[in-house]
Length: 511
Image (cartoon, helix red, strand yellow):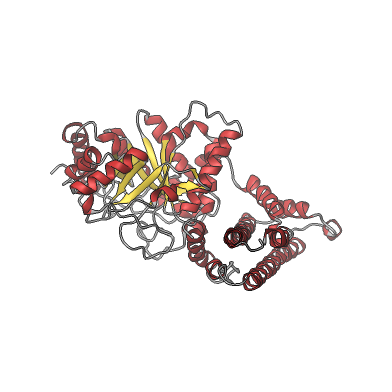
């Protein structure tokens, strides 16, 4: 359960958020059925077949309801002659829905189809892996395997009819997702209108804010140029850019804002970390939390990022008066600034759609790939899947011969995890790291991003880090309250050989 089981557990938690107010989909009880592998073949087979039936029934019912919605809306709202609607082929029905319904109805349909497809894919993979695990143990015991009897049942089940759903999603996505250039023009115009309506600060307050910002920028430039060993700078990672950890925008930019990254890069910082989320209209936007309650002027605006379009997010009005940037915006900014300006991108566990969207972005903009130094997640299964998809980009002949793909790192925690999908790694024992970074017995991921532990600064801890860093890329992330200063960073970099150290760049950084 190290990879897929943990991924499925977070998917369950994440899916509860997605289906708030609606009936929850059936998800294979992977852990329970896996526990029956050591029992009789009859017991395991019965549980597996019961789960397959529940999966198929749930999938069929949900797909039926979607088609009922499509045809009900077409007959009621499309304005088309009913003679044209009778016996309409399925793809034509989706195309007509797209051309006659409101954008909101079409986006809701896309969201529901994606959710249905995601649930079906997760359940199909869970049932397949359960058979594989059973057969592995059965072979070791000398018992009969179940692949020949159960996989035909799975592969002929309705839930495995993913290509049709993928085609509907593709039709909707092609029409609803506008080009990046059109999107940027539209968002800029919309943001201008928002700013014009919310100009509340006086000129005196503006002058004070400018002075405070200038002071912070002078300090940052001096820090990078004079206070930090130049050899350490390529390993320092500005956590969410150059920002104020208390969410005050008077002195520094807000976290994950375009100005927080441009301020850091223009001062000479090489690497900045960010978190990404996928909006309802499939835009990768920078966001750490599941909603923008903490950063919006109105804290009652607590709708989740995944339930909002990019224009709706802009309408929230942030404390800084700026919109949260698209990942594309930030990568282009890094490209414009040039030099060593690059991003470290975190994908939240269980967010397969964000991982797929990142691959689509790289496919459309291959020149921006080099501006992404690292992609990381707590979700091992997601990261191995991302490795496969990135390798497929190369196999498809994308112009990547001169482009370095981002390193893929697995995030870990330093204490017993409170959530099952996170992996615990102690500086005193890195024995499990090899298995975490392999996929089907072969090297897959490039390394780990470890949570800071005070023992890392002790001689035995530094020795363990050096040994691990000799094999893999190693990063260290901090919690608020951990030592965030130049001495600690230098110790980890020079003494432990790590490649990345996160920092919030506090005023106390240089001592």
